[in-house]
Length: 363
Image (cartoon, rainbow, N blue to C red; front, side, top):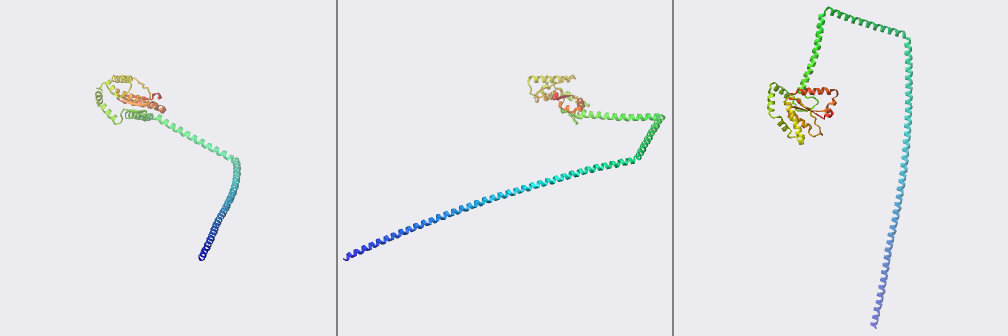
């Protein structure tokens, strides 16, 4: 029995324990459900607060946007009003300035018209006063003119009488002393002749000196020497030393000298032979004091015409001078004088001058 009762107590305790565990489980479920409900409530509160915040932010943003829009509209309206006011002010100023300028111009025209009227009236009054004064003083004016004319007539008569008196006295003195008259005329003629001769002699000396030591303006290039060399050459010529040097230099034949001179000139074979033949012929003509012939060189620029002329002068033994035909026409009326000066200068050369006229077609 005791054992049975003991087993019954254990069962009761087991049931009690099972009931307690159920109660605990129920309580735990209740607690879990309560915590879940609290979490859901909290989440709901958070979402609600977030929605409220978003709605409030949207409302604030919409309010600010509307306020900004309203402020922009107000600023634009104010700017339009200010611009319109400034335009109205500028228009009023323009109208007022135009009105002032018109008024000033009108006043200026009126003043000018008044001045013109005053000038005309003053001129009329002056003319009337002068006419009245002249009419009043006409007799006095006529008498004054007559007196002035009489004075001029008397002065002219006195001057004519004095002139005739001097001429008569001079003629009487000349007729009484004819020798003194002839002496005076002779001295006067001698003085005039001396002045004329001195002027011509000075001009001739100037021409001679220029031709000896100077160079004409038409000459661009020449081998003729000037200055001290010319004086030294004149002394040698006087002492006959120049002829000795010429004879020593002339020991070389003209033909060999021409070949040597044209040795460094590059020309076609036929043309070079023809040029050398002309040079030898001119050299022989100079040796026999025969007149030289004129020579025409034609060709394009840079083909050696000037160089051939220089070499030709070297072969013949003449001084070389270069001039351009284009320098003559600009001289106008002085061209003939300059050409004469050039030929006088050439004649002063004891060796003779080979004159090369470049661009002869413009002469």
